[in-house]
Length: 347
Length: 194
Image (cartoon, rainbow over all chains, first blue to last red; front, top):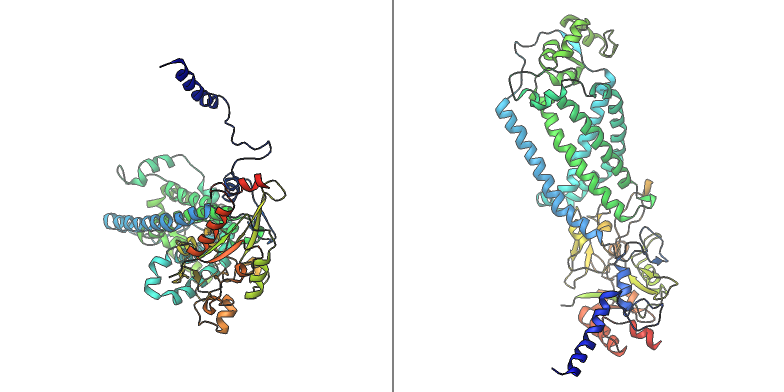
């Protein structure tokens, strides 16, 4: 190798070494011209690569200056593949769990049967709050599930024409009654919150899974930890679902597509969680635990039920003389169900 | 079978909005609905370019994927159309579409959405060709008369091209060659030569 070849090699390597030092010079244009290929610049802007630029358009409208919204396709794929699939799996799994629970535990009755003596558990206002929320929730859950799962499940059954009418009614009903959910949720929040604060002994209930582990009943007050957790799930997830729903239902405040997509995902995941948990709640309140439905229907529960499920609260009621006889209860129910009982809760 | 496509040449589009106006007039589109719009990038700066955009009639259209009532269909010419009798106006297609093509007339209180409206490639809808129902819901059906979309037909600078994808790309390729630049470098040379 002679000296000339060596110099040539060094000469060839030098520009590359200098590249490693500073930013490479991108083009041979005078300063002010951004890059060699204006086409690349244009398409970078079109695809919103830097996420801050947006074009302008004579057409005024939401996002009309944006040429390509790359998030739309991600949202669509997430909704069609993940949300529907995992949502139905979670729902089916919960139904399976509840059925398994029913097979193993059966109806949870009261040892020694009902006494006939009653004690007031819920005020009229509390029951109105509960049932308003329950009815609105069930309506929104069913209409929402029709819109989410109708295409794979119902179109093969009814055809597109009939399903379109059903889906249209679901959409309008969901939008119209959706805001009521927030109202009834607030009623729920204020009428039950004082009973759903953490108390001593709640952790024990949780650790023993409500008496499933270890022997017998875990001592509880007015609400057990399971009920309290369900209450806070309803309130907190419910608020998220309600607020994201309000964003979705009124597209006239100029919110762009990205906000709508994120709201939709939040709304649907939250709503699916509420629906899945509500299956367990409805089972326990309606079929699973004998005597529980009575409380939300009439406001009164059997004193034995109170002792069996909420022993500390039952004892409290007896100590304060709040337990009324079967005759007194019949008189209250028969004569004037709306009458305010002197022994109302919280007094 | 043809595969219908739009292409907008950013080196030619002068943001005259004639395509937007032609579309609105041809199909009697109501206020607030725009099947086509022109977007200008870097308005007033160096490298300003305009592009006319409408439904791009995607092969694998996200709107069709996400529609909860399955109202979209693709014609033999590769045109994505929808059935307004099935559409419920939920707005999901607008969220899914990369181009912002689906439009919604405001029908009731709180900007409640009416049935979706979008570019049909001047091919009408599922109704019988040239019926008054088809015209009222989807606008003129020019394609069945052997005519291409009006927006591209009356583009003064021939920036907006429409038709069979092979023909459109052939025209564009020849333009690029004539500009003396590779497809990946267009615009750059135009700058130098002024």
